[in-house]
Length: 237
Length: 237
Image (tube, rainbow over all chains, first blue to last red; front, side):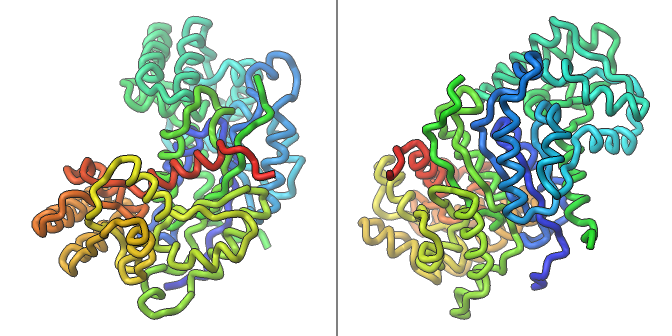
């Protein structure tokens, strides 16, 4: 059994929320070609949910969650990871300042999503399924616009269903989460949207049992693929 | 929103294998009373599967996996955890030396299982569903014997089914894993065993879709409950 691993140690800034972190880890597992333990991606997971809510500070223009996230990426760097994935889309509002906090690269979930959209030859116009904070911040739409993708932001009615769905996942109410996701998908489809981009790490869990899942590109899965690709890439040195 | 958390930071020595680690994290989530992110257990997860196989060294009387596991618990202690759970039963063969490596307590999955057996008023005689290494080592049976439980070790025929089931989980073949688990359960039941103790963190995944799941006490779930209870307990200081 070869133990000298060619795989690079990855860090995961998780806990936002814990169910989303588990979904991300499960997707890393799913997209890793492995037949024994030792072929799987080595990871240190910072699954610490005691971080201030991300959405309200984006609207207030404040940075309450930043210090705890910086502590998280510093702990991961201290543990020896070679790159970090953030298993929360909204947290990427602070991407630049988190990236400046550590010397290791932080993968960006929007960039990973662009790779996936290109691979899947997705249409250029997609409905954005995200938190209110991600929509308000605009970083995700901007990164995708730079690559020629037009993300349609949900109207208030659709966003209320998404808010409800995300909150339900965080309290483990999967039935209500799916019902609210279904309602959001239906209302979005009525506006003429045919394909979706799920840009929130809780929403893939909510959409999984709905009819809209097959019409959606999942940014969590995209980040998982980027994480596995980085781990399997050869060392920088 | 109260951010000053009363929850203690837990460490998880995982990666043995990665699917078992995810199953453990999902069970921690399931048994945590929480309605928002911040009420969930904070954890650092050492999900590094590049550890030498545990079973063969137990038969050879050698310690190949120990150094990597020691590095893991030291990394977790360095990251500030207050206690550690090991999400692999067989790895507990080296429990005493791992516990001596760090200054924080390491929960023992057999002790957690005893608590669960007592809570569930389980019968005193149970079929042991475990790796060949756990059966050979004897630590699990001994800890339970000390508390009055008689674990019946699988015969060679049953153990071959279990070996096959565990290996299938590690390569994500859930169908074969469940078929082999079903065969092991059926063969064990023929010997007169009515209830089981799943003392391997891969086997709950394999047994979940089988008829024997309802007859089994799950040591992963027991460890998850012990982890949540420790995190919610007041600090030692």
